[in-house]
Image 1 (cartoon, rainbow, N blue to C red):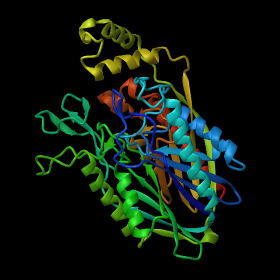
Image 2 (cartoon, rainbow, N blue to C red; image 1 turned 30 degrees about the horizontal axis):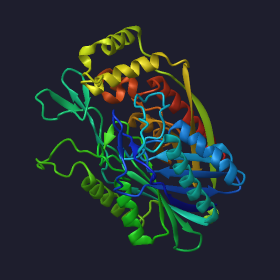
Image 3 (cartoon, helix red, strand yellow; image 1 turned 45 degrees about the vertical axis):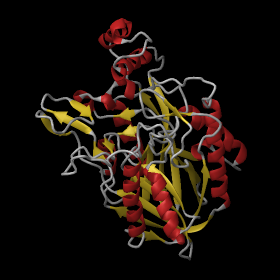
Image 4 (cartoon, rainbow, N blue to C red; image 1 turned 180 degrees about the horizontal axis):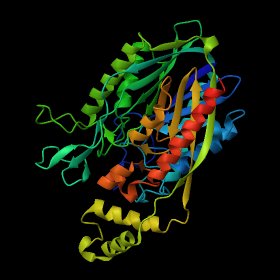
Length: 458
């Protein structure tokens, strides 16, 4: 098997960029970290996979389509099924499209704002450059797999005694009950080396934590991944690329809600939190490289991939929800003299109901990929996946390393469990989701069947 890595700067230029990760878009030309597109190409006689990680919240459907069109012209023999593009869930990064089914934000055209088509062209240029570099760098390889037993993602859904859940709720209220779900699991890492040598080609790292330490700020940032890449380069050399992936983390964040004696919590948010978490992850990746769980020589490495489009059932609002949303939006007391919502989150939730009520399709089709590299299994999910779904998939394969990656090739918003929907909260609102828990069951069924097929092909 061959592997190759490449990277390119995808920091926008030529105007202020719309920053994702908020009910209201922010616009900025301030850059804290240069944003990166990092590509990994793996190939043998069976198939080729082109995996690109981008410093962005998620890859919108429109952006993914434009990248596929470009690679079809520039990469010899390219097939759309070969491409996996994932976001790191960086919320100090670019808003790329207004046509996502769960989004209620709209780009504001202004003289100093970078138009969305131009932004997507710049990102597509960077992805293409990274992929072509990775193809050029292909060489026979061997691979190590390691686990980093560090805690990166904390449950952010707080449960109260009345059965309600609140995103980032106050854990010191008298009616606090518990955190809704456990904190996250380990970081999983694949290290690729040139066959027969100690020269490291690149690293694939899947962390169960969205890269949103630095959120709600008016600048662009790669968040903790910027620190991870810098420390890995410092230790292993400038040519070593890190493909950054976010594992299932729908209910997780890097923010610890319990203070544990740190009463001021001065560094729980912002650039300092990014640096601290990035340092923790990088040090663990570098440490565990010396004691991998398993290793594969070049002659033992094979690669296979399956890609399938899933018709996720669309979550539609009820008649009472639509009527309540219409009443809210028609009530002038909910808006100021400039027609701005007095409670932006409430208004966005009702706007999301009305937007969805006009959705013509009963299903939303999105691709899912399953891969085997050696006997490590990987799969993607086009959403912010609650961990229960990933854990149920992993439970089907007790003798395999399973790496789950969310926010790949499209974005259906959150995919919460029915239990979480019953508890309520931002990540379960109709405006935050596209599909239903039945879509989660369909994802489990489809992914397990695909992974079983890959195992059967060995």
